[in-house]
Length: 276
Image (cartoon, rainbow, N blue to C red; front, top):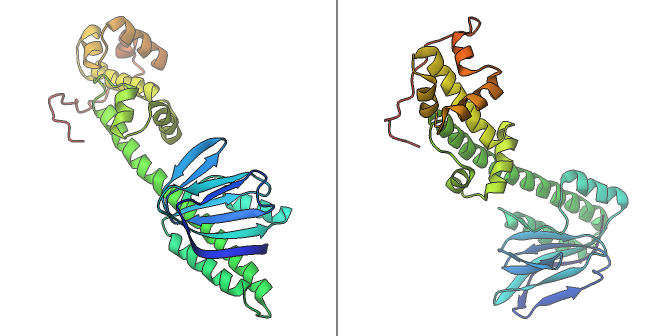
């Protein structure tokens, strides 16, 4: 990696407006410490402070201040094809703003790089190369750790929500209500639900109701219509259709099948308050 230019802790007025339709002729790394506006694919993207942003070579560069000042660190780099592939393997995104939890660490690295760049040290080329590898290696780690943290946090929320569905399968669950409970859009909620559990949310709701119906069929003498009502179905025809689709048998066939084990399971207390 070759460091072409570098700047540490530069502060600009609110009129800063970078407009480079043909880019800067190299790779540009930015650590933006103040609110900013990036134009990406002809759309303005407002970013909070503490953003990493990297432009590939020859990409258009449009960004500007959206506060009283614009504060940033920056590096212009030349990369070989092998080094570009190295960053790709590390998962370093291009033209995507990344919020950093610890921007000070990377800003300090740029400060050290700047001091080395303007020095007359005999080994500065090798030292700069080492610093750049440390920068991108640690950036990759932080991006990965932040991503894992978000995934784990989301998984906990989804797991709790799924437990609610399975403990109250008779409620009228719908995607709009469920996604609202964890503050996600319905489409993104459905995407993450299937990613976490390998099944769509609506299919899982049906599965929860069918499992509850199996329990009632095995442990009670309730009529099919009553069981359908207990499982949240408005009519028994819809219930029987879904039950057969999942199990391959009608509810009556399931209840009378000698091959089906009929364990006595604890019934769901529908009067129990929701503690979630």
